[in-house]
Image 1 (cartoon, rainbow, N blue to C red):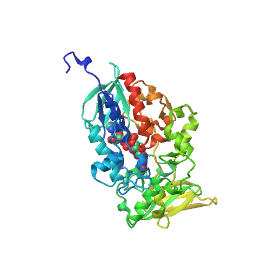
Image 2: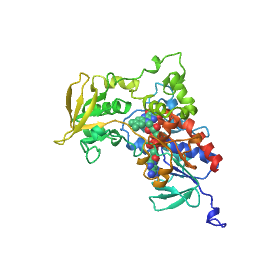
Image 3: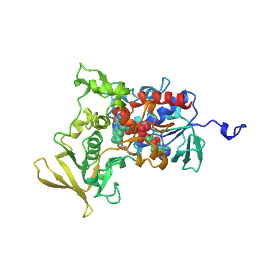
Image 4: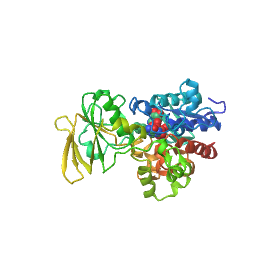
Amino acid sequence: MNVLGRDFVIQPVAVIGAGPFGLSTAAHLQARGIPVRVFGDPMVSWRDSMPAGMLLKSTPAASNLDAPQPGHTLVDYCDAAGIRRLVTDEDIIPVETFIAYGQWFQQKLVPQLEQVRVVSVDRSERGGFQLKLDSGESFTARAVVVATGLSGLSHLPSELSAAAPDGPAPTAPVSHSSQHHDLSRYSGKELIVVGAGQSALETAVLAAEAGAQVRVVARGRGSVDFGAPPWKQPRLRPESPFGRAWSLWALTYYPHPYRRLPAGTRHYLVRRVLGPLGAWWLRDRFEGKVQVTEVDRILKADAADGHPALDVLTHTGAMDRLDADHVIAATGYRVDLAAMDFLGHELRAALAVSRGTPRLGAGYVSSVPGLYFTGLPAAASYGPVMRFVCGTEFASPRLARHLATAHG
Ligand SMILES: Cc1cc2nc3c(=O)[nH]c(=O)nc-3n(C[C@H](O)[C@H](O)[C@H](O)COP(=O)(O)OP(=O)(O)OC[C@H]3O[C@@H](n4cnc5c(N)ncnc54)[C@H](O)[C@@H]3O)c2cc1C
């Protein structure tokens, strides 16, 4: 205890989350001399909620955790670990390498990380926020940064949930793609993967390569498609970490005005820009090995005899029934403040929201002064780049500057 008494002890900033956004934000806050306590399981979404053997869709240039000082890029990690440098757009990053990079970044820049869960955040009567940890400790923070990423936000569409009355699980008829690390459990089984994004297509390929018979069920004609390889990208458009296009360039490097767009446009762009499209390098592993059934829509699912079946409406207007031993819903993530149950009721009620997501102002601050959101929950305010690791480059220094000015 400080000799001057409890009130004179400097309250830290709490960063909740130890994925790319939490670690990068913490590094920037510390570089400004702000005391920070950081909580979470480092890189856990990448370790537990993505399949082993996965390759990143993002290029090396778009896969750096932003740091305030040089020496902490993916290439720096490759050099430190003595592995081949991943540099060009044709270098594909194995998820295991990316996890090791994140852990290396954490050990170098956020060594004080506390691997405990924050169970509640409420406003403190003495100003700032009162946090409780699952270790039993309780403390006051002057500001809180929510960087909880994908945690708790996996989305199962209602038409599939009837086949999973006790919730999705790898051992139930229906699971969510985030529940799989080892797809070899489906070797010799018939598997349906619902979705057309990179996660669906890569899950399908990895399961097929592990010996499953796999069918992708996707909504819309021509919905299963793959991006162009780097050597076929259009030349006369500006380069961005996601490919050559004016829209991608603007959304990556100039997300500032995004939050001034009408709400409908913002939510639409977050869903559609960089939407469902397989990586260029996945095509050869997919075609001829995974069956594709494109449907108008899935009407409902059931699992009457323990085996899941999907009733679908085909493009000709006919009904069809597709069954399998298991269905994996690769149906993504939805930001929903209600799912962030560690935020106290009063705090959640006080937050200005737009379709379930917090409305953020300059510097990623919410309508509650001192409460910040970064990563996926910030995408509705700052654009689709916030769904990807390269969003740390824009977000982390700006959030840290705002917080240092308002609460430093
Ligand atoms: C299958 C798949 C593939 C992807 N591929 C790519 C890609 O190639 N390139 C790319 O840029 N992006 C990719 N993404 C998106 C990427 O996962 C996210 O951009 C990134 O992980 C978000 O980082 P984050 O730090 O916000 O959250 P996360 O990485 O999800 O980390 C969340 C952190 O919050 C902590 N946490 C949660 N709740 C609490 C709590 N109550 N108390 C304490 N800690 C808590 C967790 O322990 C964890 O440390 C992919 C996503 C998926 C699902």
